[in-house]
Image 1: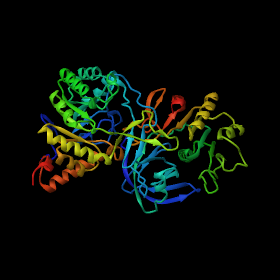
Image 2: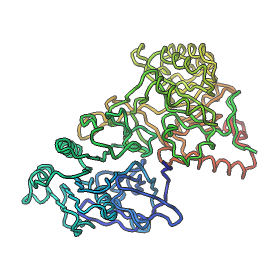
Image 3: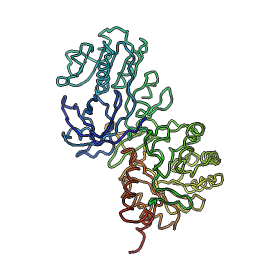
Image 4: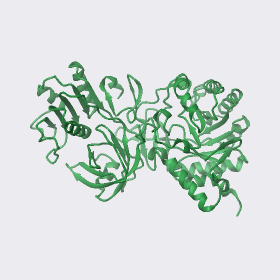
Amino acid sequence: MSISKLFKAKISENLALSSDIYRLTLSIPSEESLALGPGQFVMLSCPGPESVFLKRPFSVANYSNRELHILYRILGKGTQNLQQIRPGQTIDMIAPCGNSFSLPPQGKLLLMAGGMGVAPLSFLCQRALQSQLFSEIYFFYGTSQNLDRISFHFSEDNRVHFFHHSDYEKNLYQGHIMNFFEQTKTTNDFVQAYSCGPTTMMQSFSQWCTTHHIPLQVSLEKHMACGMGSCYGCSIQTRQGMQSICHDGPVFDHLEILWDKV
Amino acid sequence: MNLLQTSLASLKLKNPLIPASGTFFSLNRLPENFPLERLGVYLCKTITREARFGNEQPRIKECSSGMMNSIGLENKGWDDFEKNTLPQILQIQNSKWISIAGSSVEDYVFLAQKLSSYPIDAIEINVSCPNIHQGGIQFCQHQASLKEVIRQVRAVSPHFLVTKIAIETYPLKEALKIIEDEGSDAVCIGNTLRGLSIEISTGKPTFKKIFAGYSGPAIKPIALRAVYEARQWMGAYPIIGCGGISTHEDVLEFIMAGANAVEIGTANFLNPLAMIDILDKLQAHCQEKAFPLNHFLNQAHQEV
């Protein structure tokens, strides 16, 4: 593993996707090299009027041509500052952090995202499509947000069956994305499943995957100070003992997870 | 010429920067291109006799000008350390320091005794832990406990001993006297400050253990004051300063206040190369002033 480096990343866009969800585009200086895979994250300083000390972890939502996307929802001081960042500004970024999702050689994929967990799975979907090895990807996405202004690069690709379920559109669907997923009665011949989102959603999905013998990789998060395995702030108990989400994860085989300890 | 070399009595260091225990990569997590050879000292994350899971989540909370942590000395215990971590540490070229902690004097003695046959350069005795035989008061805050732990570790250990105390240790002067009299070779002042955070939404403390350690730039003036006072009382006794040090200017202030060396903690979380950056700037400062770093030692105490 090579060192997570500190970069000066330049903001090229800070786009509102809904009333409180934004997509930030950062460009990597031309003299730097950076490899990033789906599931990996970056630590961003969030300079601005609110006093923010630690960097914040954000999953990479896309990375190509030295441009990196992250999605953020305004929740606290860090993201309040991010919202006010303008194109042309530079911010400190530590990257790459953590491990990546791994893709099987071929077969049908199932992606289950909740809330901002859509970011790493969107990147994964993109990479799977680029590889030309996957002709069927089922992508479920639950959110409480108005999705009108959110568009995904893959939603027009006929290899992707994209199902989004928004609590916002109460007249369309009621309840949990997992209920919606079970109602869609997809087949169970997936070779690999992936999930990122609220713990309760991932836990339900983990049970479903266990019942249907489908391997599942989940991406977890906790508050962390460093994002590089030094502070032990994001340690959780797993079947493999104590693991740091930032260093041993954030992607784990779901069978390693003790859901009542997450 | 190495302008940054320093010494703690007989212990020579090629530069005064020490990664504070628990804030720097363990060797099996060290990125392959990190220039470890630049650091004067490698100090490991604190070990305990038995394995510790550490505290429940949450363990980290940001606060004004710093952060709070409640990690709880997560580590795999002595047996695992001796088998898997110590052999790696013994292979590096840096000055090799091991941080030890315990819940009882016996725990510290056990670890010091086990380490006595290994060629390490120093043991840092972390005495900010609660003594379970004295109602959970920190060793450094209870003079009899502090005395006993240093005396007994000294009796079994041939190594250079550094005693790491909390900045709030009170009365500081008496604690320092105990540390010197009982045979510790150096003192490190200090550790995180004990603080509290409450979740407004629930009205409950953020951390399961209620109190947590506050670190970061905000505590620097407090640690600097303690080092300055300690230098006034302690003659030439080796002192390591620690608390909120983030820049080479901070290091210079600590050296001027009387620290022979310094530990860098929270700054490592913000930038994995923080210590390397600080070393480069210290080197440049010394070159510009045409003095070795030692020239600045105790400068704040000298009469005009």
